[in-house]
Length: 245
Image (tube, rainbow, N blue to C red):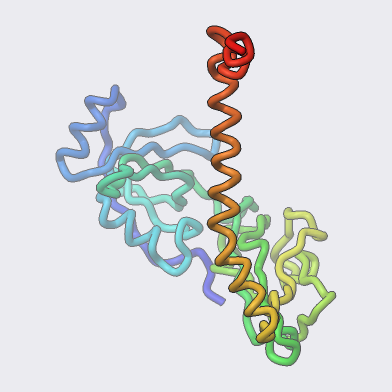
């Protein structure tokens, strides 16, 4: 199982924090504005290469990747991407938040849950495997962050639920998500009843009569509406006819 620590290096350049115009100027220069914080130190404004950031985000470990951040002057430190923003139309990166990481301190992250194997409920009972939880929050050392939590569903059948407490984790990981939270279960397929010739004929007759019924009902409603509307401004037509008689 691959961990979230990879041999990636993200180059950075210092920048002067400012307003939105300053951030646009950074983007026009082919960079993306970023902020580095954490470890009890002051926040630092940086500019990054968006291609390097995208490479990390689309790697196997994704946003849980711990990489070397190269600062101006040759200093390097461990960091993670904790937040990012995309431009909604073109999909370009707009801003990145980075966090300093101490490799000897535990941290909280969310990792994906990957189901493996073919469940007996699907293979033998004809059900459908439904995954209701796709990520789990864990606490561990940075070097122990898994790329994913794999769960074997081979023994999953109707009436049995795979829960967070059933996921493998070992001694290095601590699950923070409620252990009773369902992860996956087997659901039924809604069966279609084959129509008999008599039922088909009855449905055809009902379908043929349906337009007339709808039309008739519509006329009755329109008649009621047409009679009720004049009552707001005067007498109904029926009352006028009675007065003439």
